[in-house]
View (tube, rainbow over the protein chains, first blue to last red):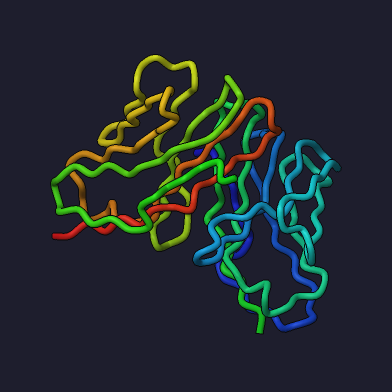
Length: 113
Length: 115
């Protein structure tokens, strides 16, 4: 069964900590994405990557960085976590093309205290 | 301007009845895909159904069908014979050929199925 795996389902971190959210896919997809989801704000794109070592900013990249050293792995990094980064983080992957959908991971609920 | 509009923030439906969730979209691209996802309270996004802009027939997947009206730019999701497990958020999304690899998501509709 093909899948996208996010390393943690729930995470609690302290303000100022460096936080790594890991995402791994086993479908050989070129594209990987990180979204955050907040009540009333929907899904917002943070960063995406269309190839190894390539990254593009999404709509809300501030406070985040990403790393894609291998095709199957896309990491989201919170350099110095803040309380306003408490959110649900969703990773997704896909092939390129208008007829290809996203496959999502199960999400990580991050709480920054 | 919003590219995906879902005008129903919340919907109620009686168990075993059919329900239609609305979605309208805006694009100048000729080639695009329309998708519906379900998000239960657990948080995972589950793919339901896909409709290509050049598909002449409406897509169907089990109890899900997509009422695609290209001229009106609408792609409504129809769920037949609702079940309690259908209670969830439902997102309409679009992927355009000429605008990169990203999806555009609508704000979602929360469906509650009543016993």
